[in-house]
Image (cartoon, rainbow, N blue to C red):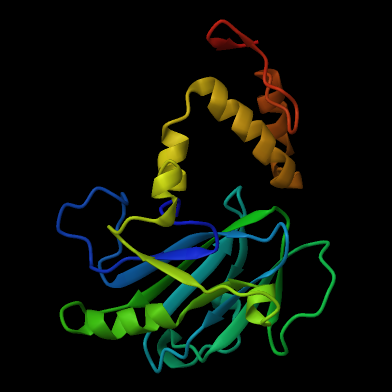
Length: 226
């Protein structure tokens, strides 16, 4: 993730070459579709297609990489890990409202989540079949799904230029461009919407020790945290 706008999937278009270093442990028989979800304003609806016998694997994690949902818990799986079409609604845990009929609700304890979908492929000509399934994955806010507002799920192919290019590059590129002060300031802001879960409460203590607290200005002395 980090290579496409929020609520947008970045689809891998080819299997990694021999010796690929990124990611460190590349999948050699699946194409990955990854992206960040933003559920702060409203739920995000993810529609997964019927894979018609093809193996697939998917999961969603919070910003602390705790698994919120995974395909292993989906009852709609068939033989050999294949899946029927399904709709999943990722929503803030305190959100109240009406979701699409038949949608599985997954509560997200933070404003954002990380979605990854992997589809099996044997490479070569079979890549065309997998790309069709990738295009059938839909990720849109609830208001777009129900037709209350206009919009469309956007897919970004690996290697193509995302829409943020005009405003500073992809999310990952924008983070890489931050100096230390800007990074920790932005991090403190993000902690407000993505608090540490109870099991990671010690992380807040460690951050506080270096002067980083959710929603508070980060103080600096020269080029160091105060």
